[in-house]
Every structure is written in C-alpha cells, then in structure tokens.
Amino acid sequence: MKPYVIIVNPNAGRKKGHRSANELEKELTARKIPYQRFDTQGAGNGEQIAASLKTEEFSQVLVVGGDGTLNEVVRGLSDRREMPIAIFPAGTGNDVARLLGIHNEEVALQAALSGSEKHIDMGLAEGVPFVNIFSFGLDAAIATQANLWKEKLPGWLLYPAALIKTVFDFHPLDITLTIVDAKGNETRKQEKLMLMAVCNGSHYGGGMNINPLSDPQDGLLELCIVRAMPWWKIIALFPTVYKGKHLQFREVSLERVTAVHVSSSKKMLMNRDGETWTDHQAAISLVPGALRMKVL
Ligand SMILES: [Mg+2]
Image 1 (cartoon, rainbow, N blue to C red):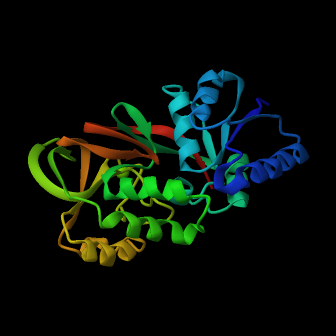
Image 2: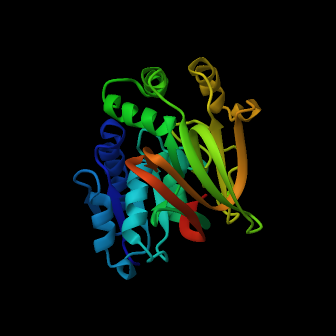
Image 3: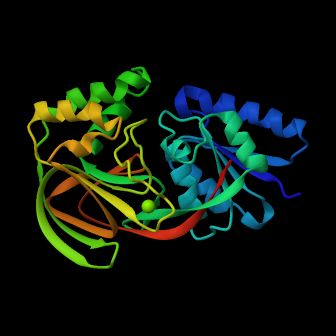
C-alpha cells in the first residue's frame, strides 16, 4: 500500500492543527496505514511541500488545517491533479470542509479511509487556483482586519467586530465588469459596489453563506454583487448573509457565470481563499472537475 502524505498547518485554529495531526497519526498507526507527515513552517510553505512531493509515491494527501492550507496544497500540486485530497478541518473557517460535508475529524477520517472521490471544479483568479471563493471590496477589508485580530478575539466575534471597525471608512468601488454567462454570452457593464464574490463554494469567513446556490460540480461559478449602500444598511445586511438571506436586498444579485473580468482605476483589495493582495484588475475562470476530493 502506498503511504498517505499528511500536510499539517500546526498553527491552524490556535494550534488545533498540531493536536488534530497527532490524533490522526495515532489512528493511522493503529490501522497500520503507512504515512509521511510534513508540518508547514509559516505562510506559503504548504505550497512548497506539495510542490516537492512525488505524487506517484503516495495514495492521497491529507490536509490538516483550514481553507488557507488547502489552497496552498492545491497550488503546490498544480496540474498533478490525479492525487486525491482529504481535508481534516482544523482551521478557523473550514468552509470547504463544510461544503463537502466534512463536519468533524471523525467524518474526515472515514472519508480518507473508506470514502469516495468527488470531482469538484477549481477556480482560477489571475491564473492561481482557488477552491472556495475569490472576492474583493468590503469583505476583503474585513478579512484583513479579522486576520489581525485572529489570536485576540473568539471566533464568533471576529467577523462582526472586524465589520464594525471597517464599514465606516469604506468607499464604494467603481468598476468595469465583463461577465461570460453559462451559455457563453459576454456582457460588459459598469457597477458601483461594496463587494463582489466569485464563488465555487457556498460559505466563507467562517460560516457566511454568501452563495446559497453553490454546486461545485456544475462547471459554473456564482457571481454575487452587493451594490453601493449606506453603512447602516450594510450592518443590517451582514447578519442575513449567515443564513443566505441577503439575496432579498435589492442591491444584491447572484448569477451563474463561467468567467469574470473586473477592473477599476483604483487598486482594490482582493481575496483568494483568504489570501489578500491589491491590483487594478483580476480575471477569474474555472477548470471543471479539476479536484479529486475525498468525501463520505
Ligand atoms: Mg458551481
């Protein structure tokens, strides 16, 4: 039997990654399943570890961490996509694990040991993979603030507190948007918006259901736009996103797309599975069925 490879972010979820990986090692040892464990040393190292793997020597990769660690591993595997990936949710968010029904470590272990493979789509933002969501605007600003406070605040308070801190200083963005819809028709429009998310998955930010229409196997992404609105309305909208009820606001729209191009005269703060950067433009597309995920 080829060994499993375990890639661990030991610091994920306030050191939960480390504890979860130790438990996982015990379970695999008890079952006499061979494995090799690698712990990441700081941001970006998961990608380097995955890139250095000889994938033909392993049967699957077990990712112990959150959405950020999974993203790094997917990037590192690059086009060597024959490798099945199992997620052990140990991050602060675990939104991709949630999407795949991997609600705890027990389910994760069963999925790795005896589950089936689900081929899901992979997004590309500026040519770099994302599994869950690309976004920019207010939510990326909130995510940046939340990252700064990650060690200080309890998880349930993190995003609401970051929202309050961010929303008053936020100016709506003037953008030019080009969309390719499910039938391949291209449209171009101007928008003034608070945020835009191009989604493969359903949830982000540790439980916000930004995309209730998510189907990561349909070869389509969902584009969610929240148009300009006053701060008090944003604060009213925010709690509704957790239940996917934000679509009832007239400023919010959701549509299925295959590609999006966005540009602005101002630099925008962008987010790809939790990683942020700034740029004037971004091109988003998808590769249908590119990822082999272990599920129960
Ligand atoms: Mg889809």
